[in-house]
Length: 185
Image 1: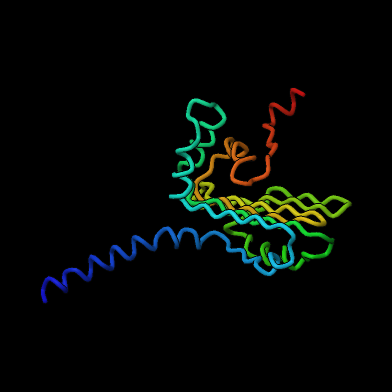
Image 2: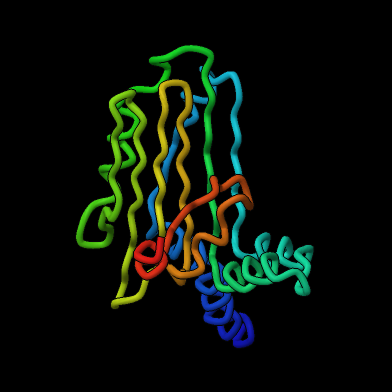
């Protein structure tokens, strides 16, 4: 019986350690857009947790400069989550769908750094999550009349390297020109 009592604290410790990644992910935002999937003509749902990312990184060629950069960037990530919907007609997604996500992306944890709304209704927004002065998450909302995409990148992120994820893991390519590069043009 004494050995059984000694195992309980170890079991609790193991259980707590197993829950830590889930608790870290819970600190990011949760998006449930399943009702939109039923209306969509095409759906992309990518859920890559940390271990899956590390597995995927093994298939990237470390000798290829671009793939090497992506490999380095995802090394510390806890997850990449993408939901993208394409619809046959306009109006299948609503502003309320976006508001449900935006409501989770508020200060003090989150701050919107980019907000673009065009006259034809296209919307692009980028949010950053900081903890203790360090960037720990990125959320991207992109919406067009017949398309809606939500991206959540969880974990420590180097902004200079973030654009390297564009074009990989169903994340749209990102043109994040550095200020010095913009002045040279």
